[in-house]
Image (cartoon, rainbow, N blue to C red; front, side, top):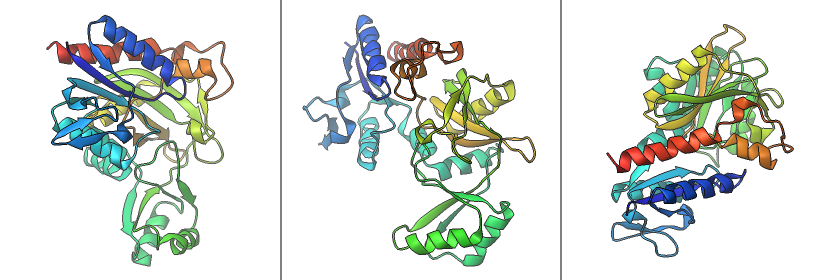
Length: 312
């Protein structure tokens, strides 16, 4: 019997989707191991085990989708699982390329895709270099944690003095800073969800405050269909980073009306329909727009990928 592993989020009604996936996979005759915490796994003699002693290295394939419970140790376990012979999707290398915002920005730029200007500096950087970058960026930049999600830790800087105040207060704590040009945009961003080279959903999020659109930071879901140019750019971004399934975030600049890629997420976006019904992101929605009813499609895509891999 083929063995399938799922490391899947349970918040935002993810537990509902997880149970459905387990049921569908078991009906197909697969053994499914899904109730474990990758942060509590361990390696012994080249094989990875869950806390209860189950050998995860005996799995044939693992699908991982759990943004809020990631940490550095868990990322190491993911890599070791792949090294022990388990087929991981998204692959560890693709996952980490997207997870590191600096690396993703650099790869996208190398592929001639539109991204904000960026800079990595250490904690004893030449002051003139940073001042020039801020001025060249139009006077506003973002300090971004390289591996956080949900807008956590992003700080908008609107003057050179403001940057140096933050630098002075934090340079004994942080040894580097990732700086990214702030591109002013209208009231919403654009998102396209991609699975295996196909756009499977697209929508927008409204701003909360002056620049963040992340729902976890107060942004709101917007029933606004994305255009073909947004879909095309999202597909190019996913291909450049070699990621199987992702959600690509973009904005359209007020200055030149050009699209810019802000982030290529290392995992698929949450199952919106289930989250909306549960009220985990906002009050329970009774009339969910058809645009957000993609849960079944996404589940089917995951199962189809597993089937194709295990039966090739």
